[in-house]
Amino acid sequence: MILKVIYIFILSSSLFAVHLKTAAQQSAPKYFKSQSGAIVGINIDIMNAIEEIDSTISFEGTQNFLPFKRLRRYLEDGTIDVFFGFKKTNKRLKKYTYVDIPLYTISYVVANRVDDEVKINALNDIYALPKKEIILTVDGTGASRFLHNKHKFYIDDNAKTPTILLKMLIKKRGRYAFYHDLGLSYIIKTNSFENKIKILPTKFLTYNHYVAFSKHTPVEYIDRVRVALKKLEKNGILKKIYMKYNVDK
Image (cartoon, rainbow, N blue to C red):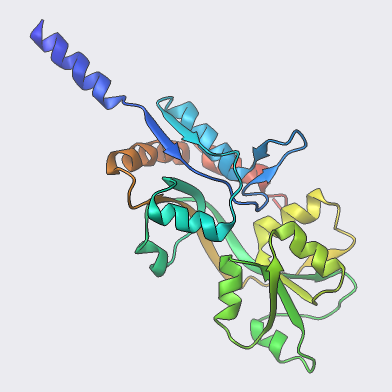
């Protein structure tokens, strides 16, 4: 009888509920509003898959957009526990705890208008042009920081979302738009911009997006999500979710 009670205690302890506070970033197809008004996207699908594979894990706040700068601050101070779809950098590794299972892979690319015949094989080709052209990007993102670190560009990063970014390009607020291929290709396709905007073939930096946790989040919570993600990676669900949003497949 005593052994049975101990066994039940161990079993129930291993299945403790994990409630994690998160938030969404307005950045299709990572997170975006559907026609019904619900926030959906590749990372929402991943969180839903985690909840299905481990019903004791739940995510709260998936229907709340936050500005990316505030989102990063909230993750650092523990206001939220976790964020899905984060690039890993040395600076961020000091602030957040990452799960080392890639969610999906993306690359920085340049888009321009379809009637522009310029060929860009390297970023040097842009600032080697006789006229100093403006490069558009999204405020507060890794793409913006990547360009600012190069120091040689005329950068306009007033766009708050990738969709606004491409609308600025169409209106000729700049000659180029710089962002990642997953986002640009999805927005071009879903907004029927194919006859207005093209993505140039050169990839400038390829990297993965991961799950990042606040340093305040209990280690045992992180371990539970890690186990679930590992299962999704092994059974091919992560790849299937990515392919759903990769319109260039």
